[in-house]
Each structure stands twice: as structure tokens, then as C-alpha cells.
Image 1: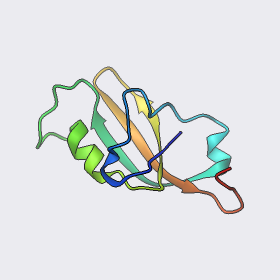
Image 2: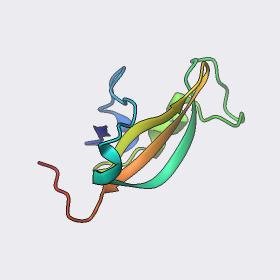
Image 3: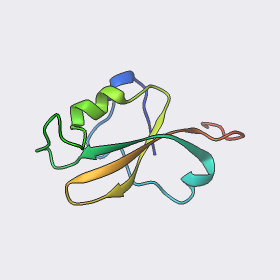
Image 4: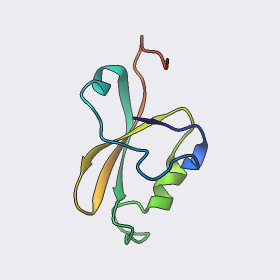
Amino acid sequence: MFKAKQDGGRDIGAGEITMLLDGDLRKFTEVNRFFVDASGWGQEGEPALTTDQFLKKVKAGKYYAIIEASQFQVHVGEYTLAKGNSDG
């Protein structure tokens, strides 16, 4: 689970967004889901967002995790902390 510190994903490095773990399901609430090209060959206008299109949607303070992955695309969930959970 990756917590964005800046809008636009400027603080996301390679491999920062990892797979969603079972333990995350109790701590976080999904608020959005993105279909993102993972090959690096995607083009704007295709169903999957390019990396740049996705990063523009990243919001500071939100958490991100890969929900599903295939050879060329990933589904990335956007999360907030569930009620009663803290960041520490």
C-alpha cells in the first residue's frame, strides 16, 4: 500500500505501488479504481490509462495498491483509511 504525499504522483518511484494484501482490506476503504497500462506502450485514447494519465489522478493523502495484474495492464485501487484506523 503506497501513500501519496503529493498530487500528481510525483513521489511515486518504480515499484512503489504494490499488490493489495488481505490485511489491507480491513484498514482501508476503496474510493476509486483505475485501469492502467503496465507495458509502457499504451497510448492516450485507449481503454487503459497511460502512466502519465494515471499519475495526474493521484491525490496526496490517498493510498494506492494494485488489485489485479495481467501481462499488459493493472487495476489500481485508490483508498482512504477506514473509520477507526490510523496512519501510524
